[in-house]
Image (cartoon, rainbow, N blue to C red; front, side, top):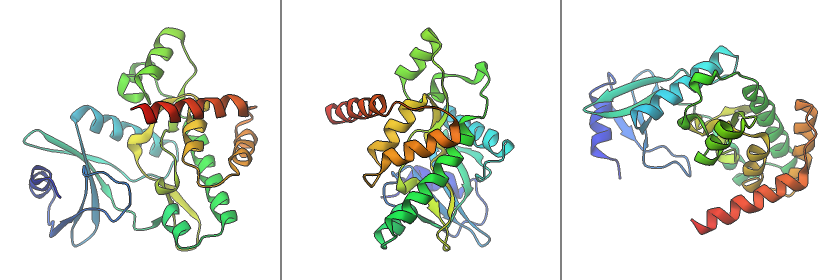
Length: 235
């Protein structure tokens, strides 16, 4: 059910909206709506002011560094904040897999997603921007603050539902900018492994080693994956 305050915020800030719908994408929460206008459809994602400004900052630095993501605006109405950006009509990898996409093609698309995430991880984030909201978790933030842990920007919720694929079955980009956060390489890979839809993730680790020049410890990443899964079940 659409939140009435969200609907009012959209109607009072975006011009020429003729319809507001929930996105037809599995897994998106109720904070996301799509505003339909004569010229384009606009994704509206609601959050507090701090997180909206954080997401816009991440979007801007990725665009400045050659990562293809939509330009993002922030709107506010009666204390209700949301980010807005142009809707991408392409299907997600999850949808293509459900339609019978061969496993080999799904693997290749994941490799392309890893290539983009590696580029994102090379984007410098100045110390003054390393607030708690920029980190994947409070634990990551504290480890970096106290121990100086080496962190970078990664997509902290990589799965087939957050990877876009065009009609020619080519990788088309990542969605859910809110999930692009500061964390370690091992944590990124462990979290991606949890939601990977096949048994060949070790091959993806090999691909990451090739593009990054890093030698990864598969056992350590697997151990982090197990601990992370256990914590998720406890919660």
